[in-house]
Image 1: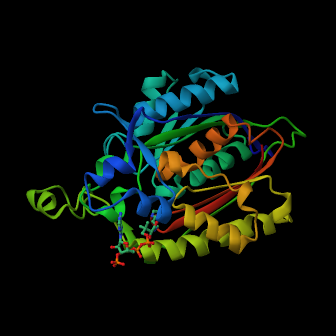
Image 2: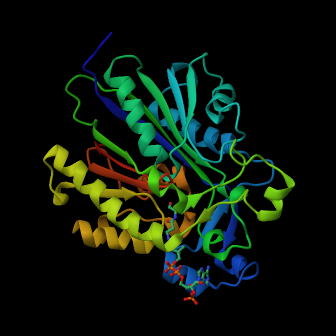
Length: 331
Ligand code: UT7
């Protein structure tokens, strides 16, 4: 079975819930204002899942679009991988819920926890399964309903996050196909994990009245520290991807980075010496959607006619963990 196969992106899809939370809405909830949020983050609104709408529901909608574009059905899939830190529940995995909702065969399905780097981690895992010849058609989803883990009394975090899902169908490329995933590089620095945490709900701090009193069911972040690491790490990831492939920044058509903060992305473009107009940025519309951010940014840019087949695309991710990584692909 050991093969020498390569993977290609056969279809992409995304889904943003209808409900909007604007900066003006947030002004009524915490001590903040539209000007501060826009200038410091670039975010103007975020989409939030409706009551009763779960992470797997968002994932399902994005996945159906990606499958349709790939010209495949759920029956054709060999593996489902959902990158999320806000799954429907701790157990079973959101990937298993999605497998059932899609009506797949009894294929392998699992969740991957790498926060905002989750989608890039997921693509790399999918690429390995295709390269070995084990699987042909893999659904990689980044899906989050983060707003349920955000404290709307904490102005430093509640302005940032939104809900969304993005999905790619990755398939075995035909021999000689140049539209392939060229490389992936993944990293983590667990020693900096305390910079961005969701303390409760795991085995260390199970749910209790104390948890609710402390608000430790919500994300906590050292924003300024994260900011510095994000700029440095994303820049390193961009260089690593290009160096490994003998490419120069000017050969890259689009950089699709994790949509964390417009100032982070501007700073990465400066450090990477990359034109800002070739950095995909749509966080004004989405906010930070963690694992969904890269596939959603990619899909929206595709719909706008920016990203086209045959182009060289660099994905760069950074998130809690601290995790990071890159994927270079010829789309
Ligand atoms: O996927 C990775 C997830 N995390 C991130 O991407 C977060 C990365 N960090 C950031 O995006 C930024 O650090 C923030 C947007 C969170 C904060 O922006 P900043 O420019 O780093 O602000 P700061 O923390 O240095 O705070 C500056 C001031 C402070 O007031 P004082 O001490 O100068 O009086 C804050 O209290 O801004 C204040 N502030 C706010 N003011 C109005 C903090 N949040 C707000 C707010 N509205 N929402």
